[in-house]
Amino acid sequence: MIYANHALLASGWARDVRVTIDSGTISRIEIGAAAHATDTRVDTLLPAPGNLHSHSFQRAMAGMTERRAVGRDSFWTWRELMYRFMDRLTPEHIEAIAALVFMEMQEAGYAAVGEFHYVHHQRGGVPYDDIAELSARIFAAAATTRIGLTHLPVLYSYGGSGKAPLSEGQRRFGNDVERFPVLVDAARRAARDLPADTNIGIAPHSLRATSPDDLRAVLAMHEAGPVHIHIAEQPKEVADIQAWLGARPVEWLLGNASVSADWCLIHATHMTAAETKAMAVSGAVAGLCPITEANLGDGPFNGSMYLEAGGAFGVGSDSNVNISLTEELRTLEYSQRLRDLARNVMVVGEGSVGQTLYLGAAKGGAQALGRNAGEIATGRLADLTAIDSTAPTLCALTRDRLLDGLVFAAKDSIITDVWSAGRHAVRSGRHIAREGIVSNYRKAIAGLLASV
Ligand code: NGQ
Ligand code: ZN
Image 1 (cartoon, protein in one colour):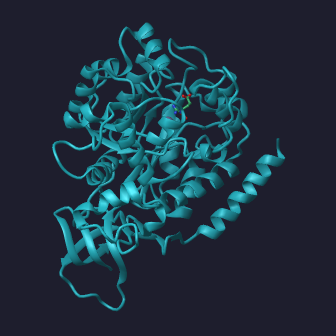
Image 2: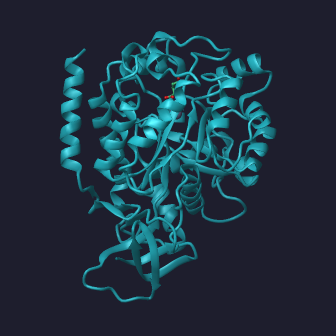
Image 3: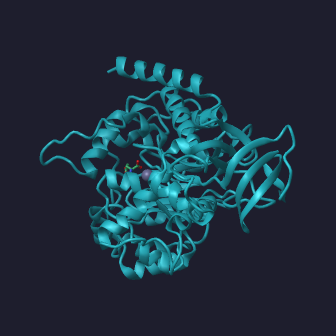
């Protein structure tokens, strides 16, 4: 049982709240209750958002691509460096990095992650003996950290739009539409021992890494669950797709696939007003990754118009160059302010920007991950985070301003506890398996550097 001095329930703020959890799900909420001696006591309880987009392995190259090479720096040159780094990773590296990343996510207040998993094969592109070896490594990392996992095996068949062949650096990603379902089935079997809140979806990587026919084929095979796709992140990508398919990426996708609430469109940075409104109406979630989008020079999302049109959104840490939920939300809002020379953009009408962003990301994140979560209510998964509202950063704020303080003013050290479907993984601000995870990571990185 959790006892919170304050809790932000689906029905609003409440005091002296006792939350009962049964098999990972919230079974009872008592308001104005007395604490029992055995309760876990926290100051302020919030729904914990899911992180809807991650490529965990990229964490290990954070800080390695921030040196200027004149005339040679763009998203596309970053991608070359990333491919080169990725090529040296072994299954052991991938598991150790993923465990560190998932732990850091939980310490940042995320209860769950959507791992957009596209490194499948050995160097050169030959599958491992177990075709889902690297999915199994992600599962092992999820088990170690106890994070809620939505695994998204990726179909990546081409090197660029117009069915260009895979480049040397992309061989480890490659599957065709025949082999892809074999991989997904193997991943499903390997995930059987994970907790019941584990979910498996599919992810056609992007329009440029698939083809209209292949996309149709994998969607026809996919019975239920999340569908994630990268879309319209870079101007060159928009121009290439337009030249090939005769429409802009979001325009093409909305016109040619039955995009619905099961879908998550990652980035969707470059959209016309018509695309923005149509995407909002589709019910899909915009998977925004503001820190990575800033880091890679993608541009600002059309946030104000999308929100105005009622669009669903969530956030992801994508390249994991920095893992911070509050910073993702803050960067999203600041990208709008810098573009519009305005303040308090990401809210419809009047009200709290922090609360709009935080609760919006909790709701949209849960939707994108296919998790029955996103708010504190009976029947929902116990994806919960606790913060200390008595800390100097927040102690002056009334409840209706608390999430503004959290998003704009606080450091992640304000987070005291995190539960992933009731699994209490972060206590007193630290992950319970931190020591072992960090020492494994250090060993893996030492091995990686020695192999160069
Ligand atoms: C990714 N990253 O899947 O990690 C991509 C780069 C690619 C972003 N789009 C790889 N930010 O596009 O092939
Ligand atoms: Zn991505």
